Length: 368
Image 1 (tube, rainbow, N blue to C red):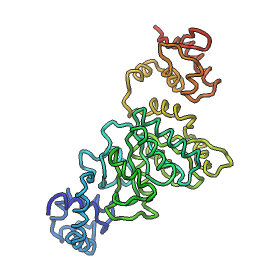
Image 2 (cartoon, one colour):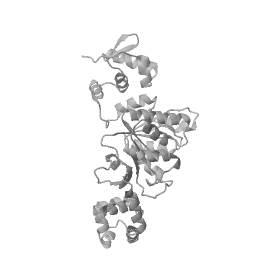
Image 3 (tube, one colour):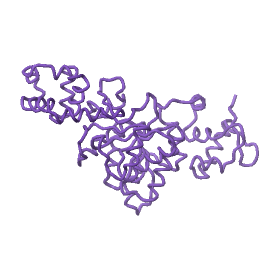
């Protein structure tokens, strides 16, 4: 049998879990070397027992496995990448219990692609829907790609908002990539592989389970430079993703809501615990441009880095150029309160970075 079949079967088998698969690859090198090894040598390694090996051998030679393999690769959009392959996402090598292999329908992110996760309530409010689509659309227009889980609610609306604005988006599934779950997201399930990828640790034909969703959350946060929580109840899978992001050293931002609204309880708690506040779509885009050191900086950002400005000063300074702009124009972009904005503008004027040319209209003025 060819190399691709051996890799497919090793990645797809449920005879042993990913931890044992990883140990087997560390011991034997590749799926081909493991499969070609003598049974007694494999059992002697002490990673899997004789019964597990026998089950794998039977599965390997079964007509059903061969048909699944043929069906998987009959679709040219499908592929598999192992953790030792050059195209395996570097970010996912460092998550807790990293994947041994990923099943992909579409194409993985390019190196240096700017990835932001958006997660939230499945039964989100109209406000959650509008903000998910708005933020995802603005991210797409500013060169960011959106990562989510294609679930009902915020996940689905985030993918849609990104796609509607010509962006790239990546969905980590809690099932095989051949299964559209939930079925109501068929529209984005069909679109995403042409504008990003459907990605899963789980093999073809595997239905979603209660555990598979929180399991895939570590990949959503792990792939991304930051995580945005749009709406979340006090106990929510979105909070699991946020916690994993914090453990991974990622920035977490949350959309505030009414304290009487159960859908906002989880997001509000994140803010109370120190998460960044999503004040507006424009503000979070500007913040992400400044915050994520992995994002490629353009000439203006390099200039601001040299100027050694504070974060809020960077955001405001970037909104001005050498044509006069009013305070009202900049406030719409930053989402700051008028008082906050005026304080920053005064500081920038005192430092010589801005100059008032007529009442409440300013231009950039890099000091000598």
